[in-house]
Amino acid sequence: MDLGLKDRVAIVAASSTGLGRAVAMGLAREGAKVALCARTEDVLNATAEEIHRETGVETLARALDVTDHGQVARFVAETNQRFGRVDICVANAGGPPSKSFAETTVEDWHAAANLNLMSTVYLAKETLPLMQVRRWGRFIAITSMTVKQPVEGLILSNSVRAGVSGLIKTLSNEYGPYNVLVNNVCPGFTATARLMDLSRTLAGKQGVAPAEIEERWAKQAPLGRIGQPEEFANVVVFLASERASYVTGVSISVDGGIVKGMY
Image (cartoon, rainbow, N blue to C red):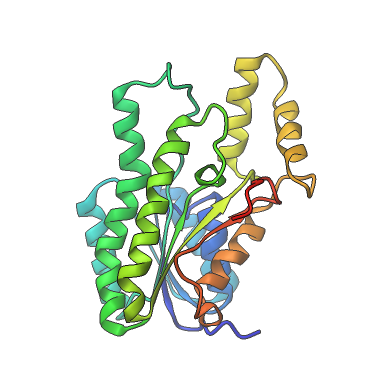
């Protein structure tokens, strides 16, 4: 199937590692030019070079903090100037730390809102008007299955990412008339470095081995395993494509069936 992504221009946030990296690579393999950003410059540059080497597509990499609106605005403007357009934006950021409500501070809540909600707002503010003018666009947020089914010990993520889902649904209504599709993709337990860090944190609190935590997660999925980043990326790449032309305003779980709700 031709996804119609050749020469499209995609911004992928937090794309040096993990899910963001898998999404950027997936889009590049379909021929999209990719602009990558993340905080750690050396890792980011290495990822951009690998994507270019493997796919041959043009890449742009800039180290920045997505919680800083000014930095986001400059990055989007540079991408637009470099490639002449912005067709796709994948909003992504690392998750807040694992804590119970009693363990959180007011500062934790502000930090979580800035990291996950406001970073999405900043990217939307800068990219959606560019898509609106061209009357074609894809804005995709990466959140978590926690927006549909809270996970114990992740109260910050459970709460703030739900706000992102509300934002995405509202934006899909506002920008649909301009052929700009806005969707939310919700990963479950996926084999990334962050998930492994979380397993070590929970294992330390519970006095068990990290492998036991990971086995518990795998057993929650009817498929009986933890997902791979490429499996998640495949869904995002489809939503970014021409073939997803009548899909907007949805929150799609990519979790191996963990979420037990019907929607």
